Length: 590
Image 1 (cartoon, rainbow, N blue to C red):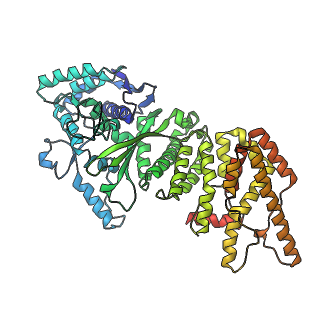
Image 2: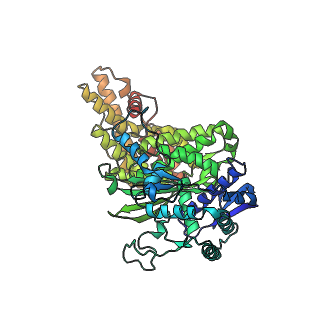
Image 3: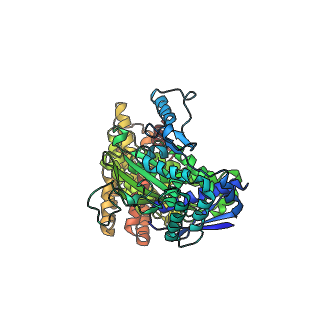
């Protein structure tokens, strides 16, 4: 009986992960044959290898049954070139014509009730055909060729991964002998498909690759391992074309993400990935794709484990990036015309500031993720300012500290004020988001946010920037004039001086003096003219005690930390507290 399996990490790319998920799919199918349907095989990251545990184990008798009913977890693809009459006899296959009919119905804007069902794993199929169809079908044809002796093939495969380190060379030698005896003519080694092996792209198999060459690529992978990667691609990958929407699909680049398991069950992963794929159909540019993937996958995980039959497991989740899923291995493939090449291999972590110990925390973090997604979706990656902001967001979402978040919040005011000045939509985070984020990430900073002086000075920043800009535009529409000046560039000024305590305090106190003088001047002018003063235009004065509070906080936490929080909080919106914020909420919901 087979119970434990090990997949060595040999490439340190998602190629290793695909093998683990492919093996898990095979094991799950074998257990189902034994009547153990829906077994949640854990895929544990043990550093140098993945550890898969089968309970109950795979029985030898189950393998013997493969003589009569062979296992075929994925299907070949029938295209114009691989027409049905050219496919091996009785091989299970997908008709590409069915996929074409689906896209034709989309083009014709067929009503939803008459639209054909979206083909399962559509993103995977579109990545395979046409770029990898030859290698993919070749693996499936070979697997079908050996089906009559599948028990012996499966024994070889399971034995290969029954111990670590995986003994590839003996498995290759055993395959040569088995293939010769059976007369299969299936070579033990095969070319690594770039779709599953990002480090084995065109020319990259050569010791000194001085050109991109997809001909005569060396055969370096055991074919059964490569077949497992093809199987695992359906289970753990999401892939999509990215780029300018004006470009044709044939001109776009490709982004592929593969789940990096810490210790997720195979059955759990199947459900979560199916829901996640449905949620990712609208991410069209590279960095936006990364940020939304981290946000939406995390939210999908939380909602899945918050369902009634899984709530008991919530208290064991803790920091999900350490206990469940670390994030995604990512690869960017550059379109080179007739082919594509791996241009970047990276990793996108799940938010390290999310820690779940109760069902109540799921709602809290879901709210944070929803707000973060609304913020993210407003950015047009083709513009340099939005591009830079998205980079900061990606670093923040997949990080464990506030540094990247502060880089974003320090750069965001210029974008926000610029968009509003041009009369365009812009969405800012709420103060409640910042409060909850600080509590989740670094609770030591909470005394800063709780300080009355901090709150009042952040209020002064907000009144002099986003509030002043809003009411200036609104009063102008009504033929009036807002009595206070807009302090464009205030956030940038404070950010530039933040590292030097004396310079930062000089700039901050200079701003507060002007704010107080302007507030008093406008109030006096209104009294002299005996004019009614709209409640929305009234501003609080800053007290001496507020400045004392800020100086004390700077002494305790440093000028840069206090400055970062003042800028983030000062340019954030106060939910449902005044006409400005109500307008912003209405705008964001449109």
